[in-house]
Length: 450
Image (cartoon, rainbow, N blue to C red; front, side):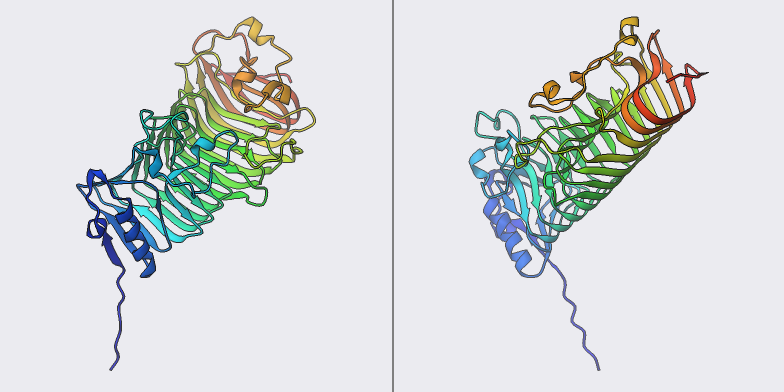
């Protein structure tokens, strides 16, 4: 005769720990007690029940806990800044300590999750949270954690970033929705020095970059990242890779995504702080009303709060393939182009642009076409700010402008201009080892001399 013992993970309904769930009472202690006991007992679910609005200040996720927000439930951030604790690490960007606090935090935790078809509403409206009123808490921050899952939830109304993932490993994000328009700096997912990240089947409507990959520490690379089947709309960039870039970036793929109504750039890829960036593929993308479908810069700027004051040497930025992209910017102005720029004697290397259809409004003048001596992204040009398109302005190309690149291949590029444009469809400046094949302007093949 044999006996078996089955251990079933226990559900912890926060109402059983004293939570009121009435949308008014502060239930932080009840939720935290449920999390603490769940983790202590070896794991299970902490449940925010359907039909309830549970108000919290800062809570701390622990090992083996799944925070399950049921369909029809809301986990609501407190409108009182003092309900957000001060031991939740910090925002890693310079000049932004007012974003240090957060609603949901985890440090050195493993195997935890946030899931369910309910909503986390950070309640980050500017009537409650501004820099002058004390600060703007982020919704989530995870530090030195591993094996994390974020699934199916809707995340809305952060006062700053929706999430900061710092130096974490093994992350799965699937089926989420982020809407972050009620305050400033409403980033979606910011992965800083993270590895083995998979983001899929999600939608983003953000007041700042929807997904960021960054490296605030030189010993913490950002690598092995897969992003697929997502929809992006943003007040700034759809995806930003870099800016904070003290560490290396490697092995990133982005596929089967759509970008629409984005104010700045679809893919914004920028090395500034001394790391190396390499081996990235972007494939099967649709963009509409995205002024710069691809914007790449390689220069020097200090982004991180812990970065040395001295600018770091420029290392390397190489190995990028962009394929099968349709971009329709016919409703925008003439400042709509793919813009790729290194620096003199510091080239971006090995870029392929394949199978791209690009529709633009046109309108470039003869003066625009003859524009030379465009500003470089030097420190004199940048001052204390980022390498943004506005620092350079209207480009002398209607489709692609590239400079300071070694190894640039363009194959099967189709540009359509709605209005007359005096600029060439493609302009190179200081490009070595280039190849162009099958470039079309308004359905007619053109042969350009560089």
